[in-house]
View (cartoon, helix red, strand yellow):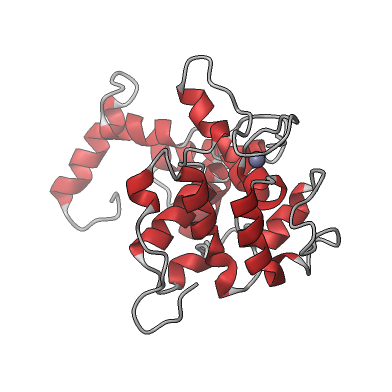
Length: 250
Ligand SMILES: [Zn+2]
């Protein structure tokens, strides 16, 4: 704006610059404050104070790097041992960032498909831990338990996303996995019609690979969600899972 051909605007900007050391409420002070945490913070501050141009390509890449910082922190946390939404999303669901910070960010594949609102909502809830599986519900209840209440037997398992996907031995969940066994068998050697569940945890990368497979039928996740929210969120579970009209049902 210092290069503007408007003398009035140039003088207003210069006046704001002069005000900056004395007022944190002025536009320049707020702009300088917003630079905090950027790798080129000192350079940007100096550029603003001296009226020099900032290279926008470098600046936007720097902004992206700062925004991704939250995911670099999440990368260090294991969702199997910490009840942490960011770590859960990062480890099991997130689309990896491009190494080139100037590349646009890709959105998850299901958002490009013609799915019913119910399926879209269920998948989003599952991916974002905005559901009522015990691991999440327990955080909102006093003395809430994370232990799965659908597994038969005495063993206690945390009812999280991986448990629902691969480990829970509830007979309806097992039947659903058998129906969609072609999604599981390429990834899990132990999975079979006789034993449509895993007996032990699998590593996070394998879970991520399974959930990233390019198969439209992966949207059985919506049916899985219905099985787990039935009784807790019955109105949502009762809605149909069919794809939009003109497409085959899941
Ligand atoms: Zn279970």
